[in-house]
Every structure is written in structure tokens, then in C-alpha cells.
Image (tube, rainbow, N blue to C red; front, side):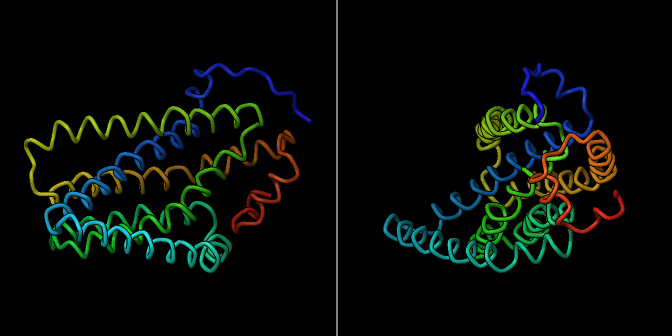
Length: 231
């Protein structure tokens, strides 16, 4: 078993694969904050205080039901049939298409339904799939990268998005216009995931040759389609 040693943070930034994964994590945090702001901004404009309470009660109820359906019915099917990287494209595609629809047709029901769909896939499919991207790395690099992604990039992305909203909210009052940022960031996320494929294959192949993977990690990676080509 590989001994866990200290890994300098700068080591992570010398690896192109890790940099792309970090960029995907950061960008997806950015546009999620914008999506959340759009929903709450539209809700505050459309509904009274009592209606807001009722709406968010129903919203989280339906989101929970949708998440359970995705978790127990769709996740295994999608990952087994599509593979890891194509499965990662689902949530940015939802946000890419949904932001365009909401920009062209800014209706409260549209942004609400869009958020339910995005959240149900994000929590049950996208976030676990992003964690699998770290599995081909050696154990000490993987642990450092996962800690940095969750402990640094996530709050940093939330803070950056918050600062952007503070700057933009005085100039942009219509919540639909924030769809432009969601559209651009979602498109960038899709491009980065597509760019990641050759790096993922190479780093997985290198890890297999160097026997850097634990048996449990190897089983999880090879359970998805496309691994035969690497073998």
C-alpha cells in the first residue's frame, strides 16, 4: 500500500489533467450560484411571503422525489451505458439548454422546473462522477486534489460568484439576463469535459502500468464503458 506523504499544493497545478478538473469544478460552482439567484429572484418578484414558503416547500419536495428517481433508476443506467465522461456532460447540457430557453422565454415556472432538473442530476450523478475523476491519480495526489477541490475551490467559486452578483445586480435587474453568463459558463464546462477525455485515458493508462490504483478504485473505474480500450 502506498505511503501517504505530504504533497505541495503547487504540484497539483503542474498536472494538466488536474487543472482541467479543477476548472470544471470551479466553473460549475459559478453557474450554479447564478442559477440559484435566478430562481430566488424570480420567486421574490412573482410570489408573496406566504406563497414563497409554500413554493419552496413544494420545490424541495419535488426535487427530492426527482433526486430519488435519478439516484435509484437513472444513475447506474447512465454510467453503465454512457461511461463516466459522457455522464458528466448531462448537467452542463441541462444548464446550457435551460439557460437559453429561460432567456428567450423568461417564465417563473420554466426556471423552477429547470432548477429541479439540474439539482436532481447534480447531487446524484454529477458530483459523484466528478469525484471519480480523481481515482486514476496516485493515492497521495488524489487525496490532496480532492481536499483542495472541496475545501478551497468550492467556497472560492461561491465567493467569486457572490462578488460578481454584487457587481452585476445594480446594472442588471432582469433575472433572465443572467442566463447569458450561465449559457457561456455551461458551454465552457462542456468543452472542458470533452477536452478531458484524452488526458483521462492517458493518466488511467499510466496508473495501471505503474500499479498505483487500489483494487477497489480499479473496480469502480473499470465498471464503466470505454475502459477496455485502455486495457
